[in-house]
Image 1 (cartoon, chains in turn orange, cyan):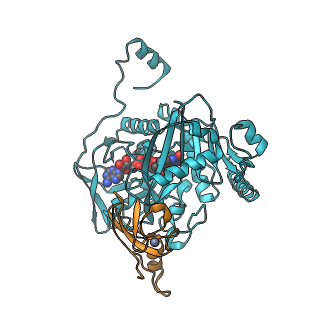
Image 2 (tube, rainbow over the protein chains, first blue to last red; image 1 turned 180 degrees about the vertical axis):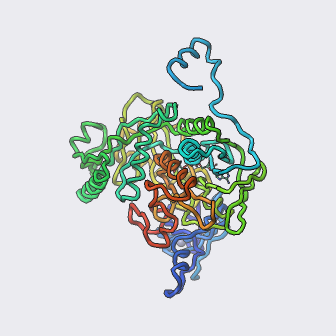
Image 3 (cartoon, rainbow over the protein chains, first blue to last red; image 1 turned 90 degrees about the vertical axis):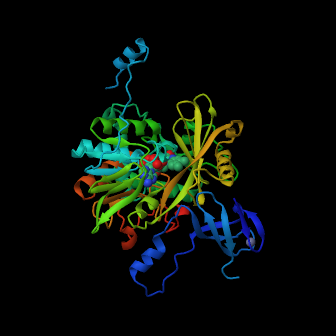
Length: 83
Length: 416
Ligand SMILES: Cc1cc2nc3c(=O)[nH]c(=O)nc-3n(C[C@H](O)[C@H](O)[C@H](O)COP(=O)(O)OP(=O)(O)OC[C@H]3O[C@@H](n4cnc5c(N)ncnc54)[C@H](O)[C@@H]3O)c2cc1C
Ligand SMILES: [Zn+2]
C-alpha cells in the first residue's frame, strides 16, 4: 500500500504509523462517562471507507487523515487536517 | 456412524465405499429455539454444547460461506493456557482441559498434540516478566517451567543462542501446550452437533436482525427469514458488521493476521517456539511444513490478504531466531480477518438487546479458546447467565474500567 502524503508525495506505508479511526472526537473534560466510553472504546469499524489517522513518522512527521477502503486499501483522500 | 479402528479396517477391506457424510447439509427451517450466527469453531462448539449439555437441540448454525472458511481454517493451530491475568487464565485452562479430552468427547481425531509451547526470553527483565507469568499460571494449578539457556539448547539446539542483538537466555515452557488440527476441530464439532439434531446451514448470510421492543425476534438471511427468541453471534472478524444490524457499536476493530507454511521437511521442531524479541512463532505440522507467523498488519482491514512489509518483517523475525529458515522455501501465505478488541481480550456476554448474545473480540488467539468458548457461550445462552470460567469477558468492562489488558498497552487494538 502507498499513501499519497500531501507534503511528501506518494510513499510506502512502512514510512507511516497508524493510530485508528479519526472520527471519534474527544469530548470535553466534564462530559458524561458514556461519552468518554464511546470516544475511547467504541468504533464503527466499517467494511468500506474509513477516515483514519496515520503519522508520517519517517517523512514530514505530520498527522494525516487518510480515507481508505478497508476492503481494498484503495485510498480516496489523504489530507493534513491542520494545513 | 461411529469412528473406530474396526470401522477403519472394515472400510479398508471394502474399498472405502461405506463412509457417509459427517453431517447433513440442512436447509433452514422457519424458526428455531436458538440461532447461532457464524459457523467457525466457536459457533459450532456453541451449538454442540447447547445440544449436549443443555438439551437445546432445536438450534441452527447459520454460516454465510462454508463452515470453517473463516479464521477456524486459517489459524496456526496453537493451543496454550499461559496467561497472566486471572480472568483469562481460568478460562484458557478450562479450554485446555476440554482439549485434553476432546477426541474422546467428539469421537473424532482432532490431533491434539501436547508437545509444549516455549516462549523464549532474551534479557533479565524479560525473564523476570516470564517468571511472574509462570508463577501466575502455577497459582491456577497450571504447569509452567522456567528454563535457562542450557535447558532450551537441549530441546532446540538449532536456535541462534548467541545472536548479537537478541541472545537467547532461556524460556517459559508450558508442556501441556501444543497444537491441534484446526479443520478437524470444525468438522468434529459439526458432526457432533448434527448428530444431536442441530441444523448446520451453509451459504446462509445473516443480513438483518429483528428487534421488537428491545427483544430479539429473529434474523433475516439470504435464505429467508428465521424466527428465534435467542440469537447468538459468533462472527469472528465480522462481529462489528453483524452487531451493527441490531444497532450496536462494539469496542472492536477488524485487522488482518497472516500465516505462512514452508515446504515439508523431516521432523525438526518439536512443539511451538515463540521469539521474545520480535513477534514470531513457529511449529511443524504433521505433514512436515513449518507453520509460522508474526505481527498483525497493523491497520483496520476486511481484505483477507496481507501486505508485503509484514511478510518481510515476519521473515526477519524468523531469521533472527532460526537462521536455517533461510534455506527453506515458503509454499503458501494467507490472511484472516480478526476482531481486535480494545483491551486484547474477548467478549462472551449478553447485549443491551434481550435474547441477543455476543461472542467476539478473540484477536489472534481464539483457536485455543474454541472448546471453552463454546462451553461458556452455550451456558450463557441456555441460562441467560455467564459461566464462571468466562465471567470476566463482560461487555460492560469497558464502561466500568475493569478491562483485561494482558499487555498493558491501552485502547489501541493494533498494538495488542
Ligand atoms: C492467520 C491466523 C493465525 C491464527 N493463529 C492462532 C493460533 O495459533 N492460536 C489461536 O488460539 N488462535 C489463532 N488465531 C485466531 C483464531 O483463528 C480465531 O480467534 C478463531 O478462529 C475465531 O473463532 P471462530 O473459529 O469461530 O472464527 P471463524 O472461523 O472466523 O468463524 C466466524 C464465521 O462467521 C461467519 N460469518 C460472518 N458474518 C456472517 C453473517 N453475516 N452471516 C453468517 N455467517 C457469518 C464467517 O463466514 C465465519 O465462518 C489465528 C487467526 C489467524 C487469522
Ligand atoms: Zn509526509
